[in-house]
Amino acid sequence: MSSIWNDFLNLIFPPRPECPFCGRMSSRGDVCGPCRDVLRGYRRETCCQCCGRLPAGRVEPDGPGTLLCGDCRKRDWPFVLARSGGPYEGFLREVLHRFKYAGQRGLAPHLASLMVEAFRSEPYFSGVRVDLILPVPLSGEKLRQRGFNQAALLAGEVGNLLQVAVDRGILSKDFETPSQAGLNRSAREANLAGAFSVRYPERLYGRNVLIIDDVFTTGSTLAAVAAAIRQGGADRVFGLSVASVRFFK
Ligand SMILES: [Zn+2]
Ligand SMILES: [Zn+2]
Image 1 (cartoon, protein in one colour):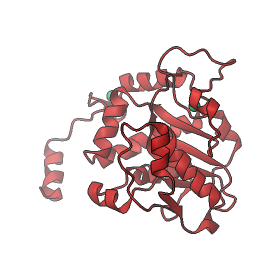
Image 2 (image 1 turned 45 degrees about the horizontal axis):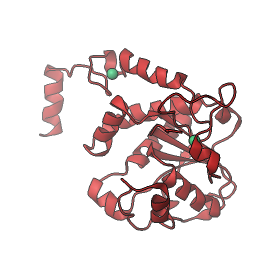
Image 3 (image 1 turned 30 degrees about the vertical axis):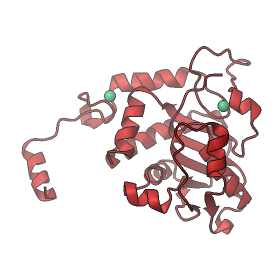
């Protein structure tokens, strides 16, 4: 349908303002109260201080408000820390599917403001400057299939909100890695090693870099990207995603 015809219809039958996440009616089309309550509840849970994931069950904190998941205990990650808007479950999971696979790009600003809330509520970031934002790239093949890079859309919005430059030209994914689903961590990492490369390392030199992705699962993607850009000369690397999978131990 032509956009003029759509504009005309919208004028006669104004679209009912609804929550972008759950579809309930909401004034001005903002995220509704019940969705906000769920998100606030996530924010009150204690996350792993390194990867930012929330525990799947009851996990005793190591000290007052400090928690480290089993993976982060074992690993020496090439990134300092990662944070996300909430766990990959419920409406967040469903919304991410609509964004990524049904191409609902209009969700990007809402998802990005959720990410920025998570970023701002992490005290570490109040004492450190982020110089540059990079989205996790898609391979050329994936980009042709999907038509857009969801991480690049999110990075643009996050960059606007945080007033930090976004650079889409530095990182590239040179070949498609086999599907990560159903693979354990070492298989994922073997898959990803060497898939990312860095152009223009002079733009990275000594900079603190925030990497944007849609979902944080095992940390393998962020680790591969962080390793590549630190090799390229970046100083500190952080991750920020819409959602992250809960950890079990
Ligand atoms: Zn809602
Ligand atoms: Zn962790």
